[in-house]
Image 1 (cartoon, rainbow, N blue to C red):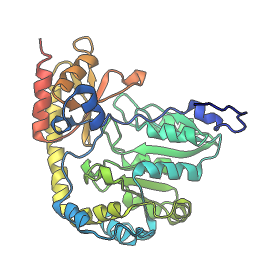
Image 2 (cartoon, rainbow, N blue to C red):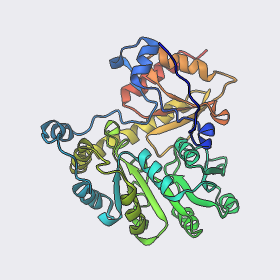
Image 3 (cartoon, rainbow, N blue to C red):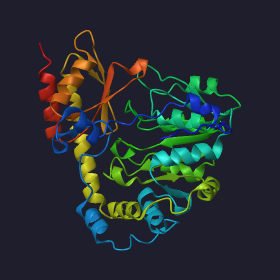
Image 4 (tube, rainbow, N blue to C red):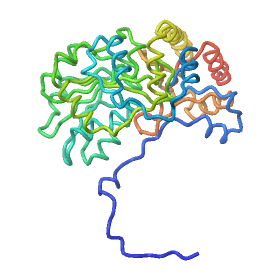
Length: 370
């Protein structure tokens, strides 16, 4: 076999050299291969997916559908109408996309030029940084206060003429706290595009979020997903609530047939089966309180109150190390989320699962007691 070499006339963009690949939570398949534990025996609590299946009517509709050989409705008309009923926001403000991660990619490319910056408040969803770098822009980080609240004064002081986007997550991943309306309004007054990622809003004390503000402001975008509350992570379906002028540009920039047929069906049928799905949400929020109390009962864990379907906890490494906890829970087939950032290395995030999952966590942690 011969290897041919020729002058390399074209290279990748220079910002690719500083682009860090987003690292998702370990998959069931990878964990099973690494540990030898069968997939059916693994408890996956590392990516904030729902531990509950979609409604039976959703699964039945996906099974009954026969036109998978045809392209989907490029306008997502039926789904946008259903979302308008669900959110109370007119369908003219709604853009459906292939997961909220792809919405991030689309919006960033819509607004950012090389040399611009995006303001975000760590610790938060790391994909914002990856996509910003890919666009040739820069991340302007304004750390949160000790209780993980936004530092609004610091945000206002940090803004530059190159700041195009202010990105907030409510509830925030991984800290679980929500944003108050006054903070949103203050940031909207800056004239920048304010993007509120509401991937976990259905689990919050205010499950309606800030959708109602979208028709009132020309610079507010709210992103949502069916991955967390609706149990449709595998179908990759998300949507944005935007001013009409932004919606028009998003539709222009989207690839045709962006959302697949299965995603349309799953989302529409989920919205028809709201009682079933929201009952599962209530189960998760109730279990969240039980899981928090359990984690808080261990002296080496310091959980953070959460309004998401997850809990972040700091590990007191003077008592037990993160590595020891990881070994203990993985021996029980439990997958949790760990962090590589220096300021987060003594933290672990756990998705709220079913009661039996909480019991299994308790058993694993109990083995670490002296």
